[in-house]
Length: 167
Length: 187
Image 1 (cartoon, rainbow over the protein chains, first blue to last red):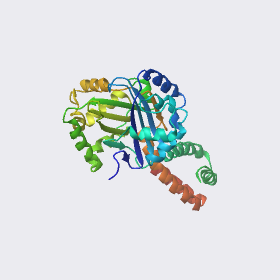
Image 2: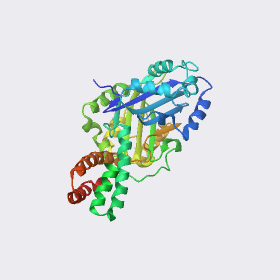
Image 3: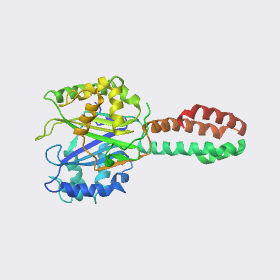
Image 4: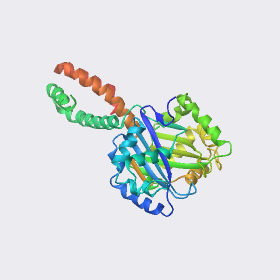
């Protein structure tokens, strides 16, 4: 049976890790510093990603990672643990049971150990990869611009311009 | 259903471009874990029946429900949703469209007030919400409708481009007009 974390080509990864005492505030400040450039942008299979410090709701403070991405979780975790090697000590290095400066292999084991399985996951366009969505949005924008610009062209020039743009 | 973009009522950290997320942790009643697992097993086998209405609303991109049962924690329902529109609009529209579904999905949580009137339900959402600390979306300005239209258009554009390579100028003109007519609602 398909994993409950899967809908079509999309996988929902959720990791809930307990934060060490006294570290929640520093972790929150560090996550807020990502506002300009998100580390998720370095993982091009990602559709959406979130990092949340849950200070009180679950008793002890927890760090929640959720990400919707394309394909299998193993290779995504490999990309995350190597691509985020510099961030890891300031994220999960502040969590209980994780080494201060985890190696990619140690971090992967830690994240897998704290992973949550969804009971149900829904995606509205489950068969489209992030790359396909971005390309489709870009092509749609270009087609709108082309349609407007091509109105004044002669038929031969219009065909030529179309093939130059999309062919 | 289309919703205008209104981000004023969502915490700023839950918003990126036109995309908004909500994270909820509710406490389940004693029977809630077994009930939710049973209930949420159904849409995996009867998707249209269980989440068809949500799908048809076309402003929810991703949603998940998770029964959280960790040692040392009370049994919780963890709900995450990504959508475009306003926070209050989302909850109200969901309540109006999904009244039956709301009771099914939230009735096993303690302090659930019922879907209508929407006021107490909005309060229930606010009381159990956790704000994002960092939120990323790969295509933050695109709404769900725009993404779906762009994906549908992509296939038609590919087919027309392949056709255009084989056509002469005059035939291209008539096919171009047909193509525009067929795809107008997707642009």
